[in-house]
Amino acid sequence: MPANEGTRTYDAVVVGGGHNGLVAAAYLARAGRSVLVLERLGRTGGAAVSTRPFAGVDARLSRYSYLVSLLPRKIVRDLGLDFRVRGRTISSYTPAERGGRPTGLLVGGGERRTREAFARLTGGDREYEAWQRFYAMTGRVAQRVFPTLTEPLPGREELRRRIDDEAAWRALFEEPVGVAIEERFADDLVRGVVLTDALIGTFADAHDASLAQNRCFLYHVIGGGTGAWDVPVGGMGALTDALAGAARSAGAVLATGHEAVRITTDGHTAEVRYRTADGEGVAAARHVLVNASPRELAALTGDEAPEPAEGAQLKVNMLLKRLPRLRDVAVDPREAFAGTFHIAEGYRQLATAHAQAAAGELPAAPPSEIYCHSLTDPSILGPGLADRGYQTLTLFGLHTPARLFARDNDAVREELLKSTLAQLDAHLAEPLADCLATDADGRPCIEAKSPLDLDRDLRLPGGNIFHRALSWPYAQEGTGRWGVETRHANVLLCGAGAVRGGGVSGVPGHNAAMAVLEGAA
Image (cartoon, rainbow, N blue to C red; front, side, top):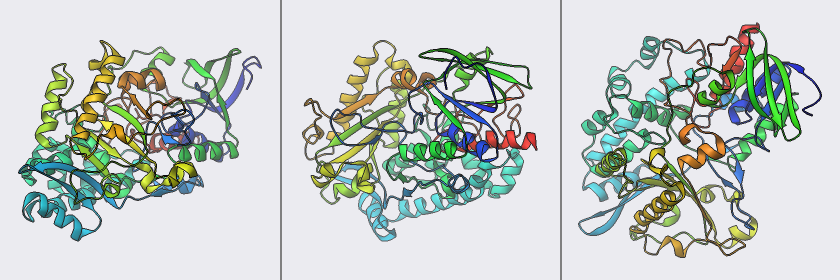
């Protein structure tokens, strides 16, 4: 789309070609609307991409976002996407040391094995039975809440009636989730495993009065109506490639290398000014859908900037020649790493790490979780690598807010990476460094991204993977009918910062498209 061809008019201009923008574009184009997608980078996909980060190595990693739970099958069916996920037979493994001996908790592989694993760690059945009751409760909530994500926002009391479980409502929506965890579980390690779902990308304590941790927990246990987190076959880029294909085949124009720089609107029509390597251009539209953060939306419209957001995670991608052996010889590494491998995530450890980071210090024992995509989906590895036993590892570190990196991003990132891997090595029978593959230049195949790196590379505000604090999935003052509305009648927010945004879900994109189509009906 040449920048100098003059102003063209579309029914909708989508700013940002991440997965939500592509979902919106595909729905609108399939409904017969003319759609232009403006993407700043040279490719679509945003944070949901697969790349080969290591020179000369044929391994396509989900570089940023990496698992799928919140994507409704409705969107996959509606858009006719050729996209599949695979379930993980192991949910998690958490290594520990008890009585001077290496042990751990393996969750998955069938009820009998899981019960036995709980008994091995805790000495009885109490914790396992509490686990069963707790996740039966969250499962009932998931079945009732997840279908509402692609409907107009319910009211708070409407959602409460729909859940129809006052104990669950109190535990998840009214009291800090730490209360529910401490009431139900006694073992520190079990408590920590439960709490981690409340802390992914969210810097909060178990008893934070804001309930930010509750909102994070809720979105992590309702996906698909089950809370299961699945592996995208072919990597996360397989989803965005399928979405881009669906949008194009329906007639949408996807313009990469086109950076939107200004949106002007009178509430009825709008113009989007954009910049390319060849100059500037303008696209006119009846509606503008912004698949970017609220910070970027405010910059584009000239509105007051929202409260600053802050991310709190370290993201590490690795390629190994082989999986490392574990000190806990009762567990096969191929099972331990197939699910979520929890490191330094006991309940007290998480509280200590949060307190240290809140005081401006790097956690002494950085908590993190790891999983191996290639165990479930080896298609991301070139045939030579898979045959030789190579595996990928993805690590997501917690409680490392962006403020800690401000003094020297590179130095702090390296210091944090070193101490994070040391926590992992404490549970391995061999150093992870001995297992790392090397790239074509002989360098270890490992890369780390701090929140500041994510802000620079992807314009995630403060590196926040949700664009801002997650919202409750019900209507509140100013949220609008679909949770995508802004103060401009024909400008909608379809990124992760929308109500019911966050994660790889496509929900904000779907809801913004529905708002446009409903308004035009």
